[in-house]
Image 1 (cartoon, rainbow, N blue to C red):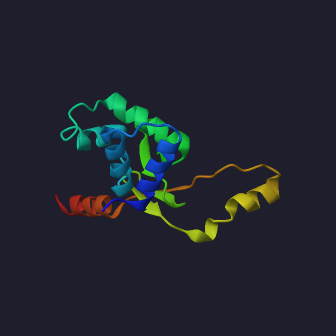
Image 2 (image 1 turned 90 degrees about the vertical axis):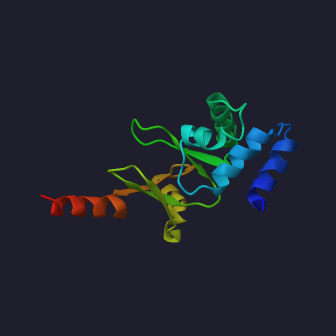
Image 3 (image 1 turned 60 degrees about the vertical axis):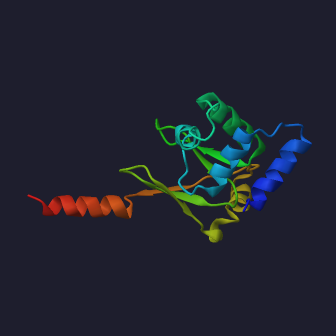
Length: 150
């Protein structure tokens, strides 16, 4: 079953004269189905076996296209590789300081933060981003297990 959002994106790209290649569609579907916030290399590794003609450059070029349209968000954290998030809904991220895993955080009470920021500062706000940092359950469990060993 194809994702209806992917279908709509493909329609919009076609209307704008963008050719829809099998690789382009595969990258878009992979992002829509992923909840792991993959890097470009993650995407390439996952799809390159099925799409032998795909290169890392193909992945990066498509990610640039998708981010320029706003279908995908690029997330950069320090010196680590960029991660990509299919922009289906507004949400925030919780990031593990140990392993770097990223989980989505849906917190609708912050939906009016841009409007409030404009009122308080006079800025014309275009967007916002929030990250929450900590230790994920897996890393916390590993840490507790390593303490028990002597």
